[in-house]
Amino acid sequence: MQIWRTLDEVPRALGRTVATVGNFDGVHRGHQHVVRRAREVAHGLGDLPVVAVTFDPHPIAVLRPEHAPPTLTSIETRAWLLAEAGVDDLLVIPFSREVAGWSPERFTSDVLVDTLHVKAVVIGANFRFGSKASGDVATLARLGQDHDFTAEGIALDGGPQVWSSTYVRNCLAAGDVEGAAEAIGRPFAVRGEVVRGDRRGRALGYPTANVPASGMLAAPADGVYAGWLRRLDVEDGAPLPAAISVGTNPTFDGARERRVESYVLDRDDLELYGVEVEVSFVARIRGMLRFDSVAELVTTMAEDVERTRALLGTRPVSDRPPG
Image (cartoon, rainbow, N blue to C red; front, side, top):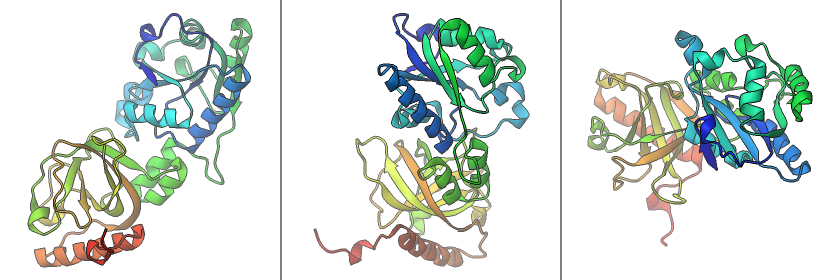
């Protein structure tokens, strides 16, 4: 996949394409539904390439920064997930107040027609674009008649609950990682570089790989979860079962920032400082607690590990057959 970060980076020799436009944050099942339809349309037009158009930063972060939601995925992760869903290339438009002021006509001509040479555009039925969200699917279809492309709005996918990035964020805020996984079609995951922590876990017998959870990227609510850790510096790295703590460590008066701390079951030999990892969440075990003693904390951590084993279906190394 090519990632173009400005209109000028798109090759001028690019032929006709099928485009889909949206924030695509999280690339949830609603997004995947739209991409599948775009892929079908592209196939029917002679296997044209499918290009996704997204924005960075999130438009709300520019227009109403005090209401900006935490993002579910970085642009790089979004690109990888869109490629998995069936997108060939990604155009990232740097969003600004100037871009926010573009009319639907200018967005259509500058981006879709002059840059991507679209033959068809497939978007969600609730798609809005242009200054003050004045354009919709009907606007795009009308403009398509003037510029030789078709526009199709796809009904949002989902059961009683329509899949959306907001729904996923609400699930995460409640610690409902299973609900988030249902909406995105895979376990929710965070990615980041392992940093040095307080090293208390190692002293307690549970060394952890610590990834900062601050900033604009979303993370589940404070608590303890069962999940998996995967190294990203190793091709096809196997996921390792992990008990995962999200929060600020209140028993020790808390860290200055939220962290995702992963204890890989039965492993005290991993050297992960400076390594980029992916931590995925399967189920919530409990909320974050403050303990009156270190002994009480260690006892509860042992219980967390056993519940993690049960949820992930793993056995202690000592119980596994040799070889």
